Length: 196
Image 1 (tube, one colour):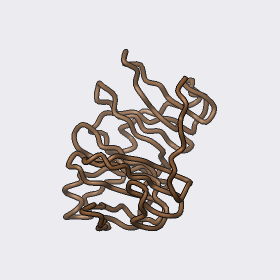
Image 2 (cartoon, rainbow, N blue to C red):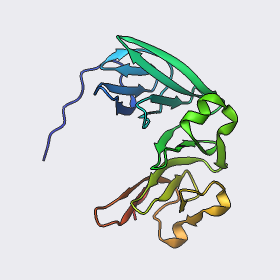
Image 3 (cartoon, one colour):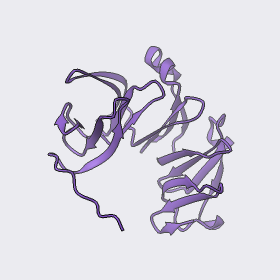
Image 4 (cartoon, one colour):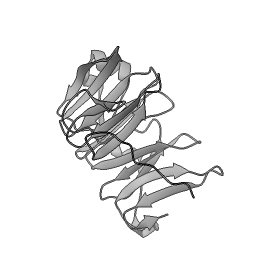
């Protein structure tokens, strides 16, 4: 069994991690914003960090803002893309659409369109969401805070277009933490009370 070594970095309570296009490690923290290779660059809570298909780093958290951060020669510039939304998890599907999980629902948008027009973001549901995953057959799986699992096609943009899978269907719990796919195409769902 492999032994893990703790990172010797300041500002514990890490919530998210992602590597940028140049291989630098970005960490989102509970209180001290973003750390890049161990150096602090912005404040506040950062629940999620991800790199989009164009290499842009996006952050979100309970500071109620979706941001794009750019790192250039030891300087980070921050562009607030949208306020009033607190992303907890972000996922980019195979069509380049970004899905945002929040405590107030699920949103989807094209990252290029949103930079120019804030009205381009679409709220899919008011149900609090935790995770999004696209499987090899291009179905989208959405883990919710208390309603189980939602599944539909990549084109699904309304709650009515999704099928709900709950404890009545065999989920151990209605709080879905994660979704993954095995090499054989089987979907695995993690909940607070076990896996399905």
